[in-house]
Image (cartoon, rainbow, N blue to C red; front, side, top):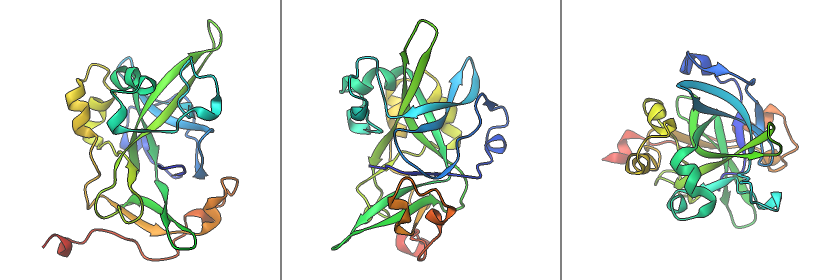
Length: 228
């Protein structure tokens, strides 16, 4: 499961010219769960960026440490934790990349997964609202994960689902039927994502230097010759 995000230098207003920046984008080279994170939602026909807590906390959750930061796509319709949110409360998390860890004999090597073009990624997610008083509330979110494609499966078995820009309104619309939603819960196209190894500094969530994302090796990416 993805437990760390890279969120920096995102040209969101170029990607979504009508985006309402209700809150400023939360940027971090090493963003961990149990922290505020920026989400894009559709509110009264308007795309809106606002801050939410990364870790889904429905009103009945008693232990905050049990708040899941990821939800498996296969369980969205069967688990009470996710079912209602999947039907009516979906969002996307804009990122410049996310980290995964490849298991090795003596340690784990972190990789940063980005779009090959380095354009922003919109990660599919759920959200819920917990009212602390009649007027005060906290919104929270969990990323949705799907099986990794064959390019990235040697690094990890699951990755966050990427929502294509052209499908954003479909994904965020609460009236979209579940069959259409499920069709979007697929591994990323082979040519979309690449991954390169980075420093193990990223293992420490307190480490917030841009060095977290500096490549220590070449990018793993899909080549046209691999299709032949």
